[in-house]
Amino acid sequence: MTNKRLTEITNRIAERSRPTRDAYESLMKDMQTEGVKRAHLTCGNLAHAYAAMGEDKKALLTDKSPNIGIVTAYNDMLSAHHPFETYPQAIKAHARDLGATAQVAGGVPAMCDGVTQGQVGMELSLFSRDVIAQGAAIALSHNVYDASMFLGVCDKIVPGLIIAAASFGHIPTVFVPAGPMTSGLPNDEKSAVRKKFAAGEVGREELMKAEMASYHSAGTCTFYGTANTNQMLMEFMGLHLPGASFVNPGTDMREALTRSAVDHVLKAPATWEILSVKTIVNGMVGLMATGGSTNLLLHLIAMARAAGVVINWEDMAEISEIIPLMARVYPNGLADVNHFHAAGGLGFMIGSLLDHGLLHGDTKTIFGEFANYSKEPRLQGDKVHWVDGAKKSLNEKILKPASDAFQSSGGLSNLAGNLGNAVMKVSAVDEDKRIVIAPARVFHDQEEVKTAFNAGELTGDVVIVVRFQGPRANGMPELHSLTPVLTILQDRGHKVALVTDGRMSGASGKVPAAIHVSPEALNGGPIASVQDGDMIKVDAINGILETVDMEAVKRPAVQVDLSKNRSGFGRELFAINRANAAHAELGASIFFQNEE
Image (cartoon, rainbow, N blue to C red; front, side):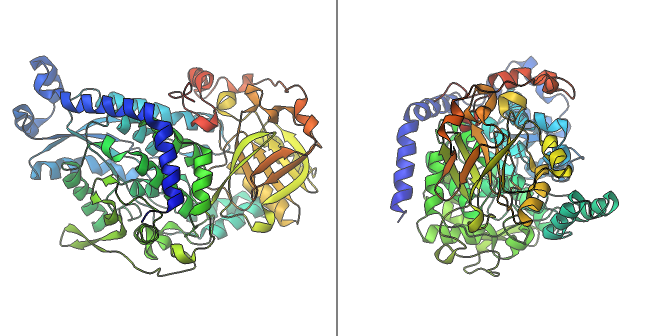
């Protein structure tokens, strides 16, 4: 039986979403009724579509064999997407074996926050999600595809592809992952070197050696950041094959799972049937149970709205209260996703959550009933078969059952007060550090924080306020490069917290960080009135973000010169995105800014 409180939250979301969800379902049913237009295109249309298809032309022209549209985020700069280079040919070959055809419908950009971290390019990162959604829509707009397969992994790519998949929800969709790289230098050792470098104890040569030993081959980064949170989400939402997320690239199993994805996209239900209210709730449950990336607090809202489902941070906070934290994966622990997968992984988690009524088991998936996602894949020859997954954790330092979790509530917290609304990833923050009351130091750039640190100005308890980092100010970049500085201050025994209208990424760690503050400073949010020395309370236990002096937020909002954020490195091309981005609580999307 489903948990009573989870049912109540789900029903509330369904009722709130009724107008938009009804409109979405009506549109999708109409598009399904009209069907794919291949049979109705002119001969000229079809000739253009099939001109280069060689041996597949005959099958395409019969209009009887299904045609799969492949949308790929391949590039060979991103380790996570590099494996996708060979996927289209494998998909095409297997489709032929099944009497179907496949075409690469189009490619979408895939940028890496790891490369742009602390760099100007990070100001385009969040907006790339909506560009990806538009690019995938263009790819599928030719209306010659009976199904689609999306090849994408990392931070903004999967959310953008989901938004597009929802828009083309009248056809089936399967998401095909590439898997994580094998384990390299342990993440805690890499983090220790970063802290030493920030403190001036080691040089760049030693830092580079550690980074290269950690990020060393094709595949997703192995810590539990946004990319791997995306992969978890696709399993909890029934859009991956069970157990597919964390199988390493270049293995027989990885290749067999890709072939099997073709099998299943040809018989999967329409995507709109999968992207239901209950499926979205299951995604939120997975986020809380794993202590996943704070970026999904933006992306899930935008993804859900694309399917007519209206969720908010309050829903997420209430789900977090009833969902136990079952995983300890870096930065919430020492293990990486390979260790997590070996300990029982997502199959064990889903099985345990279902047993305790903490997931909706009656959702549609690409693989039948949702209970199948407690199974795990096994190879028999070159084919995949699914068997019952682990019934107990194989390493309880990494993975625990819902009945005996690491903590009784999930890994994320919603904060509110006279400084606005914010969110915090608390799964890695020690309980004695979840309340900080300290004077503010206000900055308008993360480099200013580093300069103050290097000058020895940060010597006591402090709440670092970094503002004018919201979507309309400069694209809402991640401020993850502040992590070593903040960690050093905390390790020195100071009470430290970060408050920002920017992002802190899935790598948010041991320092309490109240992020995504909304309204943002550029829109006159209260954070724009804070001054150095104001006492600020950041309380993740009771959900409070406020200035102790209530008069402080009545000051006029500070105005700053943001002209340096307006051009260079392509930023001038994204003025329309900055001007039209919704606030963080609506997912910071250009698509849904007018929906309340």
